[in-house]
Length: 184
Image (tube, rainbow, N blue to C red):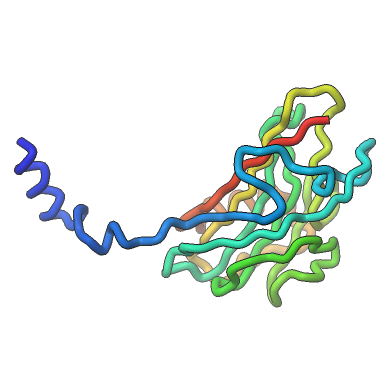
């Protein structure tokens, strides 16, 4: 039985050495750690929160070779809205980009040329830090880098996050994520 499964896998090219050599698509940060709480620097400055509202530095490896552009989203699925909360939406990041610096501001200073930030659920573009309700359970913040099959998403800077999300899912060929938490 084992021999027939192995033979079948080889026949379909599933168990080849090149498959094992494909690097993992990963997202990491020196400022935030997967599975750990974010610091006060990533808390919003507004809405009753008094953090630094600094976007974390991010870097990635293993982007699928057929990627034509990238997009980044930061989403809180635990927000008490019934639909979560979009904290940052960046798209049209050139495919050869391998990192974003910390402290990208609302004007986009620090983004690679051609990249765009669209609206967040705070009603404006740019990174909007964590600001869960005081005393609520820890909220999860999902930083997701999307590898896309298109050179550019033809979207305006005032595009709502749900529309950007729709276009990301329609064009995604891979994703790398890290998830942090925050509680006040």
